[in-house]
Image 1: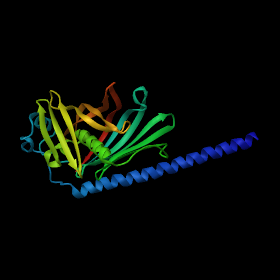
Image 2: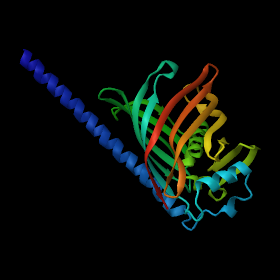
Image 3: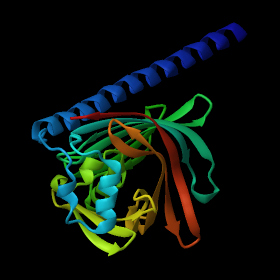
Image 4: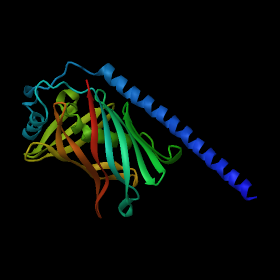
Length: 282
């Protein structure tokens, strides 16, 4: 009896492991196809002859002009696509939730704008949640699955989700700052001597954020009074923080970042990470 039960248990565990492995491979292939489509579209539609020159930003608000002159070397080619590696933590369960280890690979395309964020969050030992967050061809989406197999969250494209994901792209363009130049479609408007509003439009979507600059001319945070929050099906203020700037391939970019919702009960940080690798592609 005991031996039979043991064999059945082993069979059940093996079957479960097989299902998980199949689910992981299937998700890996699907995500790879999305990344390929993203970078292929960028390679086809981008303009490889673009390069940064200080004269190109002379007309911009002073803090924005100083920012570009600080983070880009003259003649630096514009980026067409980017690959980032991230290591950090993600907070699950709201204000009472705990921080869980996270690793992620993120791909961006610039023209047209888009990204695919492929993250693994270890919610418990040997229990990962795979999250694929994306903005592709004007459509935002987020899907999370336990062990790459069991769906636990799903946000489909819609006007609110599309705009929220385009806002994310705009905020994270500090990792490839040529994507924030006017010739990449970003419109800048002065707010005050230390901040300016950036607006990006794509396929019927519009995203705006206020960029706040420090004494050295670097972006220290980005803010918006309204970003769609799926948990409440409503809008809330949101802030992204950036720090530890380093020169990488002729571009001064932040290698630490965190984001938070600014709710009536106070700030709710939910993601923080360091950039462990960056590959800019023309």
